[in-house]
Image (tube, rainbow over all chains, first blue to last red):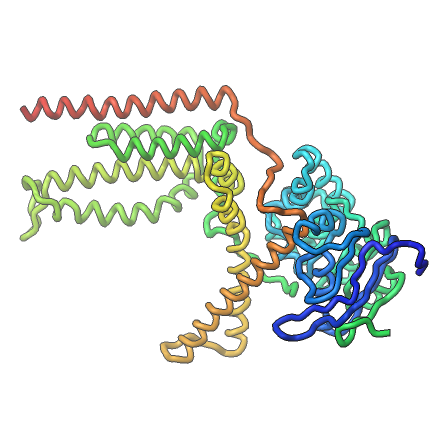
Length: 219
Length: 268
């Protein structure tokens, strides 16, 4: 890594405790512009926790979170982080809640203050690029697991984030859908943080890998 | 977890679709019209005016061109209840005898009361089904919000619509897991304990899911307010329809009073 460039996202000596258990211990971690970092490690190593810390869904027990050059402490600090960092959840059912896919994809853009016309256009364009145009008016709970995952990705992409945090994006997808998703992600310019157990997926996308073990980065 | 569960429909009843003229009207108008109608009809005292209200509701039903079977299924629950009332009220209300059945005596007052309730209940139920039942949940919640219902309540409604299905899917999964391990419900402690755990697990999982959902929404910039893609606008046609509806309701009230005077005159 070129140390001259400032990291987009950074954890400084971050610890995180969950129900008395130390999940992360004095962890140092950076994501630089243009990188696609693979975050690997055993189940329960704290990969999802790390993603949630970066967008302020969880607060560290100790240490600092720096995003886009500013230390982020309280909920309000993370408002603009969440607009610039898109998090794709492990379970698409957690992410989709509107009756139709179009409304779900437009939810983020509307929250960012875009006009309804603009939000609709953004949502439709995003669905179009993911090949989901015909799903726009479909009811989200009737979609298959693969379709849900792609729509969930669309909900994140419609906000035009600079960084994508993807939590096991290929888990539960069939080979064809996973390949389609991987190919699409490869075309994106966004900086990415990929949590996955899918070797071929990471091999195709990641520019470097970070292994979490024992609550810290294992070298 | 991304196991695909056969997805049952969100509601046991298929959505009702109204005629185009009905869909063209602002949801707020439809809510207000149904609410006002219910208030007026409830306040009616005469059988004749209640009958007129029922006729009005039936006219609306014909004009709305709903799927007759879907409508019948919706009205079935109310009809059962009304039937019991129709059969019992004449015998339980004191008054001049209408006819006797063995030792039981049916009163004319009871008969009239039963008919009055039948007319009123059916009229209100029909208009509610036609004007409000044909709204999609989102439009319904939005219209409520724009009529001044607190955000929290409309959000609760909106999220419940989607979440209820997920909880149902969760319960189906859990019950499948039980059956897969040879669980057969019996009337013993083991069964009651298992059901207790099932309900407890559903509550815990629903709560956890609600938390994850809120997290996902916060990630997408949610700060406690919903914005809508398309907001229907109140048009002149809506104002005209509102005026017409008010006139009809006023007419019903007037008729009710008028019929009252006639009845008084007849009594004197």
